[in-house]
Length: 236
Image (cartoon, rainbow, N blue to C red; front, side, top):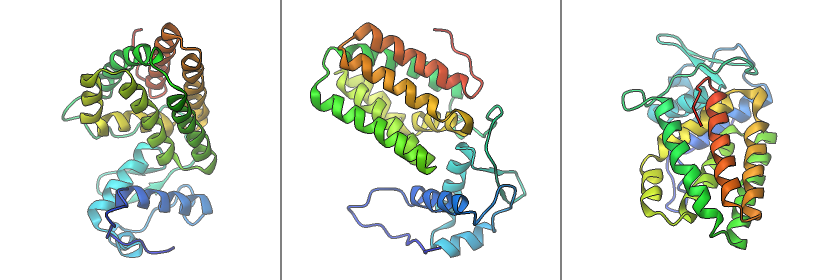
């Protein structure tokens, strides 16, 4: 495996931990680390990839959220196989709020944002949203779940921005990491990876038809179903 420098240029804004997630995902897909095997120690992995221990821990935490590995206190990290059961990953923001808190916020904010955005949609924003969906599809085909989650976040960010409500955007930006984590969590259900893609495609169709009611309804349905994929039930 090629070593990865901890140093980033000013033009490269991607966190080191994200690049490391992709390197480790590639290694798993190549079969370097098979399902059920234990990864080398953090010290060994840090040296192998040329990254700090803090970047490595962040990368492993993201991979655990995506259902790729499992870590237990006092034990090394184990590679998981395909996930078909209920997701059971550690929520990293428990000291601040629950997963349900985040989904409840998104249900209220993003469904209203979708309604407002549908009345302001342009050819360019339709192209940007379609690009996010296409990138999500490509990432899932390649097994790059990190990129799939980031493109999911970008899709929703475009909608929130287009709503024109500056407070919506400020809240969405301020809570970026927790919202992004809520978009990673459902991807731990590896047998349901295409469900969010199909839901985004339906939302996109509502925007193409300049349909505020449809956009708001489909956005709400998408967030409710995303929550259900990790065992959280929201009331419409």
